[in-house]
Image (cartoon, rainbow, N blue to C red):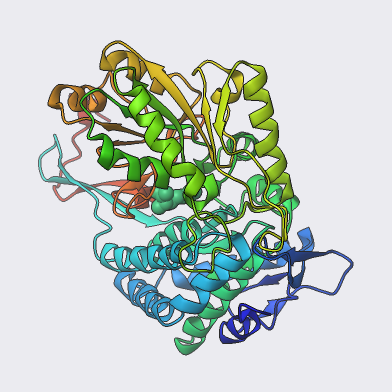
Length: 514
Ligand code: UN1
């Protein structure tokens, strides 16, 4: 235990790590054969064995959540905000150990693990403010002495399926907004990162207990895909929010759609940075490298394509070739490391397969693409980030490979050509342009510009703040989470018209005398 992880687990109270599920206060899940071992991608050590929930366990959780909803929806929204405020404070207290566990279980840098917990704290603060601002509009009625307005009511159970790469932050975007909206939560974390979810549930349990709140406001179900499938099909879950691959999202979206439920989908990205001839290239490099190799290329916002004007192409290429071979790859808990491991060997296989495929299509591997071995790299999950010269229409370039591969793509004409390349993929999450030319920047942001949910100027594709709505178009799934008015999807909207006259005039001037 060279990283003091046992101590971290103790601090976080993860002693009930065998439990398959937890409602707000109780840990449960009958002993069965169904368990999963969790190994750290950092050093290959066994962290824990986690028992997986059965669909019967899931059903028990739904019943408890339904019961909790009956009273939680009656708590005034600002009072619900007070609970979220306390959760945010607890997260502040536990930021160090939780951030460390995120890093150890998922493999991202300690800095990023801490950043992820910070993102949770930020969304808590946002949700607290929001709890007093669940505003609807008031409208002017066309009829005399009538009043019309919108109101937003709690929806019910929100099911959140989260991915391994942001194992706690993305859940918190959903759960904290849902909580102030008066909803109750069922969380199905990635089966690759169950411990951080268990740790968060422990933190939340303490807050619920201190406030004598009912069980079932926050629930976690540790399980495999069948739990997600059960949630998608379950009419007791009016909203299913799912983050992950487009393949997974299509399945969830179809099943939720078939019952006319609500799905909030945040799926794959194939994000590009455009570097025009007017780019501040030196400044852009930091954004490009952070975007491409940060989190070892395992963010949905990772920069996967670099669309470069041919006048600066060689300059950009040689700058990247100076940086890439020197990137400090290694233990993410160690200071100074910039690239940690991939989540598992399956991810490594996808990385090497994509590199072989793109070269078979005619791409040129400029650097990287190797699997590191030796004492420092005991897991077979450490790779050297790859730079590949490629064309946008290569099949491999069109797909999202969840690994550090950056495709360099050349364009020679106007910014419109670059925008067409940028939009010329199935996904539509994040995008950015580096230019000091106002016409190019505005063209990129116009209705004929980037077709993505996120479009940035002179910053990279990853590392969004929680204050904006987060999500994307096309195969990214169309959902929006986090800031702005994303909260509205977690509520049931109602239009109310009140007549305070002694007449009953009909709208549209219809005459109907009885
Ligand atoms: C994700 O990869 O699913 O914008 C979320 C970012 C982070 C969130 C990424 N704030 O890169």
